Structure formats: C-alpha cells, structure tokens
Length: 370
Image (cartoon, rainbow, N blue to C red; front, side):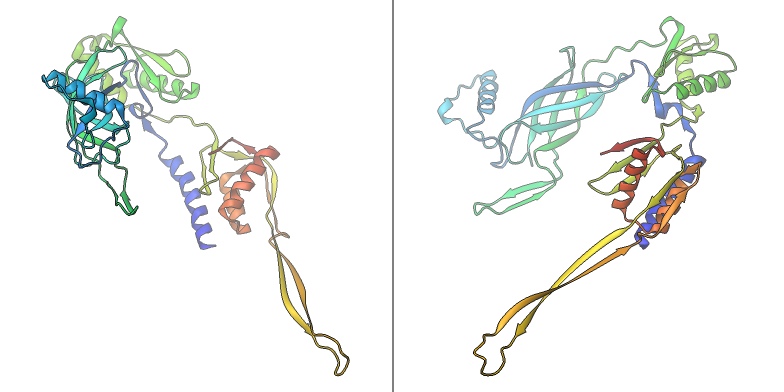
C-alpha cells in the first residue's frame, strides 16, 4: 500500500513538473537539415588474445590471417594455421558533419566469429568506409571490453558484462571530411525530430519574435524554412545566427499518450491525457479450499474397518468489490490517480484499468503497450 501511494505520488509529481518546465530549446527537439552523422563500417582482425579467439571452424579468420601475412611476404600452410589468438571483427563508428581531418572518434569492435572474448586484444589497422564506399577514417588500438568471460575445462563459467563487443577510445582518425552545404540560396531549413504541425508553427512564431522580422515559414509538419537576414549574410554571420536559433525556447506540443510496459508493470502517463465520465470498480475474488483428513473408527466387535476420508472446507472472500468510484467529466489523470489510490489497486490492476478505460472510450489518449 505504501509502495502504491508512492507510485501515485510520483505520477502526480510528473504531471505538475511537466506543466512548470515545458519550455525547451529548439536545439533539443530539432536540427538543421543535412547535419546528420555519417555512419562508418569496416572489417578487421583483433590480435593478441589469450586463446579466446576464433577456432578452426571460422574459415574467414584463417583466410584473413593468410591474406594479411601475404602482404608482408609470408606464406603459411593452411593445414598448420592456428588462430585462437585472433578474432575476426566488424568495426563501426560515427563522425559528425564538422569533423575535421585529424579528429579522433571512438570505434566499436564486435566479434563475428566463434571467439569467446576480446579481452586484451588489439585492433589492427582498419579502413572505415561510408555509404558512398569512400574511406573516411582509419581505426587501430587496444580494445576495452569492461568485462570478463571465463570458462573452465570442468564447465564452470564466470561472466561479467559482455566480452564479445568492445570499444577503442579515440581509436579512429578522420581522413576525409564530410561535405556540408548550408545557407544555400540564403535560407536554412530546420527539421523536427518528431513531426508535429502545432510545434512547427510555434517554432516559426518564436523565431520571428526573436529576430523581429518574419523570416520563418513552415513547410510541413517536420520542417520550416528560415531566410537569412542581411545582417547575417556571411559565413561567420550564419554561425552566429544558428547559435541564436538553437537557444530560442519554445513549448512543444505533445500527443496525449499512455505507455504501458506489461512485463515490468510500469505505467507512464504523458501530458494532455483527458478522461470522460466513467465508473471504476476494482475487486479481488479469493477462493481458498482447505482439506484435512477425517478418521472413522468402527464400533467395538463390529468387525468393521478404520476408514480415512478427506473433508474439504471452501472459503470465498471478495475485497473491494463494493467500492465504485465515479470520474466526473471533465476528469484528468490526477483525478484518476486519486481514485486508484482510494481503491488500493496494484500496478497490474492500474494497467488493466487503463486498458478498460480505452476500450470504453473514456481515455482520450493513445495507448501504447510495450
């Protein structure tokens, strides 16, 4: 009961806090068009493993080692090639549009063979290519996995974190910069992360108010076009203008939504969730059946036999079934929280009530079940 009331209190607190701090910066909900990260990928080998690399069945590792050694003028007999200290891996990374040549970024190394751990390994030189098949960076360095994976001959196994995926901090050096075009035709285009007509209109109004001129024009629910004023018509001026745009505060609109995770019993209620008139009844029916032995003894000299029988007693109890709480229109989630608190319902019952209210047409919100 104490835990339930704490949960209801937290839900009410989220509702009140969201009303007081609903203003956010444009940079937190939108970005300039074309300023997306470039995802890079590459294939390589991790060496220096302590017998935890790929086995003989991993033909791709054997072939990769043989090809690598041939570049150094070394020929290896396939039947004698042993690669338990080597693992074939895929290497991934991301670079931003303004990453300059010589900048360093982290890379993620993932095993693709039958290795048991990448602990202590070193990533060999790896070219990282983008979607246009151009090499944008080269990666190399010591792999950090932050875990261990130990398996003994007797079958005992100790595992901490995940040992087949690691990271090389600052392991990639940028070799090619991503071409960026901005301020083309004297305009900038802002793109919302979550399209919404109301929010994009509010952004346009806030930009016009901040710059004192009508320079923002909504294009659709996801984007708007901003004309660069004459005062900012230079490379440095555009940079200052973007900085000013990002710091403008607005109040984004939100879809009324209730998210339910049935696996964990979590219920998250968003802003603007409304309820029409409804009656909520919560009751628990408990049926308890008890059985105990009854011994029947025959009368003296009756030549009867002792008989053991089972006698059952059934108890039926119902708690909370006589309590019906009525939500008067217009009701809010705060009203529902107080009602559920009065009914002393559990988290599972709250989920069932929200689902029932949606089916009854009382819950005016999108119901998302995870």
